[in-house]
Image (tube, rainbow, N blue to C red):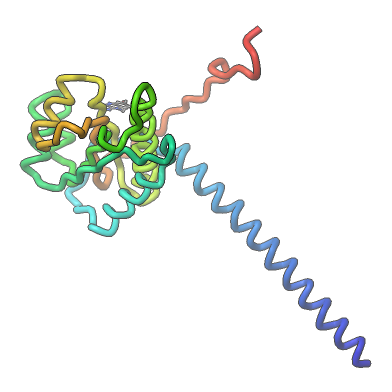
Length: 205
Ligand SMILES: Cc1cc2nc3c(=O)[nH]c(=O)nc-3n(C[C@H](O)[C@H](O)[C@H](O)COP(=O)(O)O)c2cc1C
């Protein structure tokens, strides 16, 4: 009798363990779908409402950026958070895209820090490191309901000079890009970029 009760308790515990495991696997699958959907639905946003972005949200974006992989884990970057209207307008200037800058409540300049970068030919890995951080920030922004667009600086000397001057960057910081952000005031369809002809398996014949 006692053995039967022990067996029943053991069987129930086993069932609970199996159910818990399968539930958590299902959960991971769902999280995976959400992550993939976030990647596939991100698209550049260039018009913003006047809603401010909270300090907590800004920190989340920066944490996402700093989670990126970097060569030899050097993390050769510095992020300049821009919320000041006058600084933002100066960055936007009077060019073709100045309206987008006038609307945006937040921008993050992603800079390579040459004092933290690898030496020799490997120094150029900072570009890939900072690009990975930039994409992480774009994806985090999308997941948080923000819209964002990558505006390139490096290697365009004129843009780099302008951003360096406006942000008063020291010589060791090279601006890769400025991510212009805010809550979206437009909802463009994400572009379908799937082109099988851009893929080769194994060797070219
Ligand atoms: C290196 C780089 C530089 C870019 N510079 C600009 C820019 O100066 N202004 C702009 O509006 N978009 C810029 N973009 C955004 C691209 O135009 C955009 O990603 C591309 O058209 C694909 O559209 P999607 O982001 O909606 O998929 C840049 C993107 C990259 C990766």
